[in-house]
Amino acid sequence: MGESMNLLIVLVELLLSLLMFILMNYLSDNKISKTDTILVPNIAMILLASIFTKLKDYMILFIIFYLVIDFIYIFIISKREMLINIKNYYINTILTLTLGIIIYQFFLLKVKYTFVDMEVFKNFIWVIIILYFSSKLNIKEIKFAKDEEENSLKYFKEFVIVNYAKLKNKYDYLIKSNSDIEDLLYTFMIYEISNNNKNIISLIKNKINNKNGIMNIESNRKISDEESIVIAKEKLESKYKKIRNSNKIESLIKDNYSNKEYNDLKNIYDIIVNFKTK
Image (cartoon, rainbow, N blue to C red; front, top):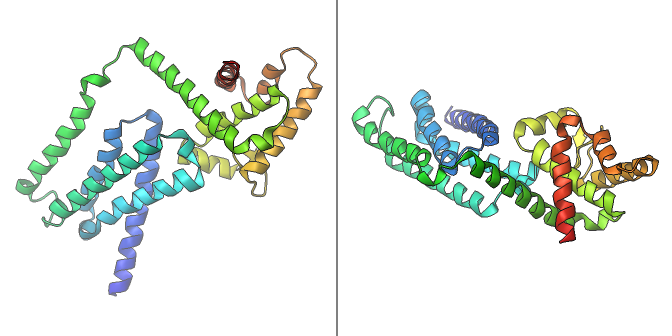
């Protein structure tokens, strides 16, 4: 009975962690702050401990499972490490775990009911509330709309250049072709990485639609990143030869993506071309 109960607790903790990961992954599209990514899972741990009282003494598993799932998704499943600042990721992970251990050790294990013993709870919760809202009121975060737009464009340009360098270093041996095709392949790769794999929901949609590899090639069998690049390259080269008008790049982009996506792809392509000509 005891072993089956322990297994049930672990499975419930794992399920809750998975749901937390999906929620945080979805919220990340709204660019929540670093403080949010650290505090929200830990606040959720306190709330869950108050709802599932039998799990209270094991709630540290919730944070551990959440961080492990996040790591597996970023580095193994979606290869999203190309999208993030690795140093900041590890700092946030350590801070999230550290805060979780403090909450677990010095609060959850010390009280019988997290929301009943308000005398014990109120001081602790106020610390979290103050930390949370102080991050929202940080004067450094107050910017004019123009500054926000300029910073966004600057970040986007840096993102494209950094990932272009990473991808070129990793896949250059596969992409040797004429310069237009090469630049377009890197454009499509960067777009697929930034757009289609930006959260777990997009990843699930791609799997349902049988899209595989870094280029998200539709296929009924599993395709590696390298194979998806070769397939995309062959298709682009074939289409490139058949295009008779002068604006081949525009035609290739519109042939592979919707008009709604065109501007983003053309921006990425222009950044790559300008970077190479410097």
